[in-house]
Amino acid sequence: MKQSCTSTFRRSAAVGAALAVVTASSAFGIGATAATAATGAEGAPSTTTVTTGTTGTTGTTETGPGGTSAGPTTTPVDHAVAVPTVAPAAPAEATPGAAPTAPAAPAAPTDGTDAAQPAAPAVTPAPAPEAAPAAPAAAAPEDGSDLAFTEPSTEDEPLALTATAGTPFSHTFRTTGGNGTVGYAIRKAPSADWTVNVETGVLSATPTVVGTYEFQVVALSGSTQITEYVEVTVSPGAPVGVTYAVSTADHSGMWQVETDGTIWEHAIGQGRVRIVDSIPVADGATLQLAGLAVDTWGNRTTLGDDYPRSTATSSAASDRVVWDDRWSVNTVTFSGPGARTVTVAEGGVATSFTAVVPSASFGFTEQSSAKAPIALAATAGERFSHTFSVTDAPVPEAVRYELRGVRDGGSDHTSAPDGLDVTIDPESGVLSGTATAARSFPFQVVAVSGGQESVAHVELTVAPGAVARIASSVTFEDDLVVGGRQDRWTVDGDVITYHPIEGEPRRVEAIPARQGESAMMRHEPFDAYGNLAWTDTEFRFASDVASDRIDYDAESVSTWVTFVHASPHTVTVTYGDVTSDIRFEVAPAAASTAGLTTPTAPSGSLAYTGTDQSGPLTWALGLLTAGAGLLVHRLRRRRA
Image (tube, one colour):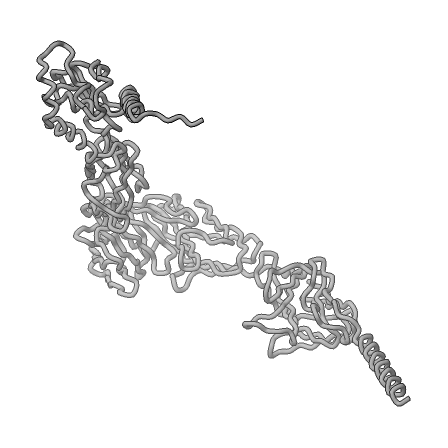
């Protein structure tokens, strides 16, 4: 059944629903701003602001007609609700029968004041104070994302700062924005000496090493972190003197002179060993030296890539000083016995040392010079010895012998090279030791007596030891050559190693070959220490297969062996009393050569995968005959 309602009833229901919505929204705080506007005709002091939000803020208090209010100082809040302070219960007295659009009803006075006052809400100055809270939205965001350094920089264009070695350095980093406290830190600091004050942002250090250093200073505020890219260039301090190395012409003796004139002597395998008062040099000999002006921390003060030119002088007029442009060194040639002062100047400062040319009467019984040293001989692996002695020592009972400067390949003049172990008795002058490297070793023996020195130049030549093994290399003439390389095999004792053009070397049991093929062999003798040990002895060869042909080719300095018979072969190489067996696995000439030159397994089994060619040929002829018979049979049937 359908029932209809009168228009009056429907209007009443609509009004009631609207009032219910307004009442419910007021209960949940919806529309509170509008309610406040009605009561704020006299201005903002008539309300109390309540701050809500999920993040912490720093608050301040202010006293007004409405009481004490709390408001944010640095951090914006999520939202603010203004509530009336005079008649908080007034909104509950709204007249149900009033029109839903009348905003003045909740602000009606309830304390018996003049009824004419409700007309005040009709004047609309109240919204103007409400516009003021909108300003914090444009202020610094609560997460501090507006944090910034006052000196901008990028990774490509860092903030450029300068410092001086040995001088305290500081720089203050400042920021703007943020949501309160800002903390500072340093990232990728050049050293522990570089620090940043976490609160003040002051970068400080006392650098001592010249150079350009790149790092970052980080500022943190709230959840925001920003980076300042910094580049500090440290310049040298004021020069305090000249430092330089001094060496003999053959680099067998070496000293280091510090800025204060201290002389450090270098010795075999030990680097700096002691401080000496002077540098000894033979009459007519030369010393090479070049100086660098440095600051207190050892930084060169004359900047540039090239070694600066220094000036050397001697207090002895007979000495001669020449600058060598090629090596950027001063060469001082000493003439006449006695002590003299050598001074090296560069960069506005100078440092001196004392050089002494000993008397000609004090010296070694064996005469020597840098160009004509005392020749000693030794054999690798065998102990050697030689006794040095002097004449006319100032204090014969107090002569001390020392070693100085073993040169290694012309690059390191202060340490003994590999393969030489040599010492000298400081009292008897007996030089002894062993060597394992077959080569020549130049060095010096120094005798000291009564404050004077005499130098003997020595060259030790080490010969290889007895032959201990034979190393062989095997290739085949017909093998493919790629980029000047081809498959080869090396034989060292009982070990055969295959070296393919491509791939890693691997050990095999025998070298694969084909019947009728020739293998080229080269051989070298070695001692137990890996030195080539050639003698007047000639290599001899033999094969356990009598049909093998062995020939020597003087042009290629190699031996050829041709395999006539297909079978395992062993070729024996003899040098003096040492022999070496080379094993071959020779396949028949009719066999496929696929894989013959490349062993398939480290066990040495041959990679022979070919088959007899006569089998497939027989099958082909049989099939051809069968096809011809079938063709004849068909022709006969067709004619029939």
